[in-house]
Image (cartoon, rainbow over all chains, first blue to last red; front, side, top):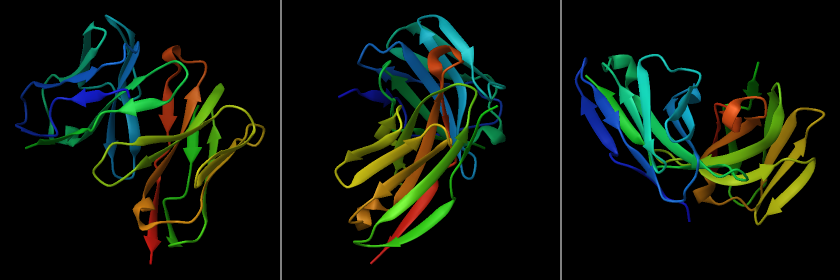
Amino acid sequence: DVKVTQSSRYLVKRTGEKVFLECVQDMDHENMFWYRQDPGLGLRLIYFSYDVKMKEKGDIPEGYSVSREKKERFSLILESASTNQTSMYLCASRSPSEGYTFGSGTRLTVV
Amino acid sequence: GQNIDQPTEMTATEGAIVQINCTYQTSGFNGLFWYQQHAGEAPTFLSYNVLDGLEEKGRFSSFLSRSKGYSYLLLKELQMKDSASYLCAVRDFYSSASKIIFGSGTRLSIRP
């Protein structure tokens, strides 16, 4: 089974801090994605990557950046955390013929 | 543009059957997914339809009509553990990496 691991289940950060959310997958998938999920808004795509060092903006990239230095690792960076970035963050990995496999999520609270 | 619509909430009785509908509009359709998400957990893959018709997998079935932009998820012999949100998602063919767009989800509550 594909395993997607997010480094933290819960995080609390202060406004203005730089925050790193890490995601690792173990199935050699080329495509990786970062979503945030908020009540009533569903899953919204922040950034995705289709190869090492390749990245593309999703629907809500403002305030975020990403890094894909190795195929198995896709990091989401909040340059200067704000309270409106309090959310559940979900990383996903995908093979060409299948849907996503999600990590267990990181619930980030910015105070 | 892309748009996915599904009901916000549904309630059903243990042992019964429930159908969750999803309609979509997309510039380049390339498959439809259903995911199950329990509260506080990540979504898990249920089904994938790319051709018209019904796909059956145990108690769950998913139907697709591409000409109507319509899908449904059918859950039979409902169990209490089926209480969860069900997410409809569409793969958009014309974007790089074929990104998947999610609906807001249908929260299904099962009563005894």
